[in-house]
Amino acid sequence: MNLAIKYLPKYTLKDYEKWEGNWELIEGIAYALASPSIQHQRTVGKLFRFLDEAIEKECKGCIVGIDTDYVIDEHTVVRPNVYVICDKVKDRILKAPQIIFEVVSESTSEKDEGLKRELYEREKVEYYVLVYPDLKKARIFKLEGDKYKKVLDVTEDTFTFNLKKCKLSLDFSRIWP
Image: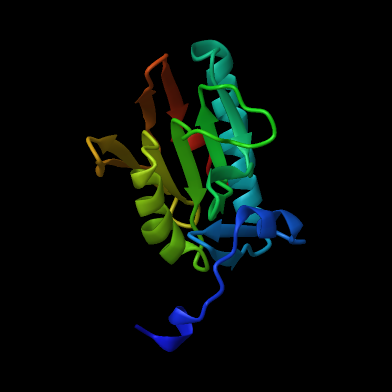
């Protein structure tokens, strides 16, 4: 075992709650969140807007949210860029959302494509969507059994998420800045 890893502090939810700034905590390791670019913010905003419109029409029992703490356990708190959840939510997410969208940038790609993908897979998030605004592409994964299976790379298409309570359609051509 690498010495640095051996002596890394293992932080908890109580530690996390005291921190200033924007952080995620994954299995006790703190990750600082960079300030989002304008392109990132516009993509998140459009995802929220069009998902909210679709939910109003198609999935009244669900909500869409942005950058809310998803408390998985005492050592793991993440902030999905955008999520859809069909359960009651107060201040924090305490159950797995049905869909999580992460907007991928050069600085977040390793964490979004690897660590978070495995984490959300383990937590049984039904759909995980990696959004690449630079490429105007989204990669959609669906949980099948215990593993994510890539469903589709989407650019200008409409995709329908088949959730337990409803079907939710999103026209991806509308989200690109």
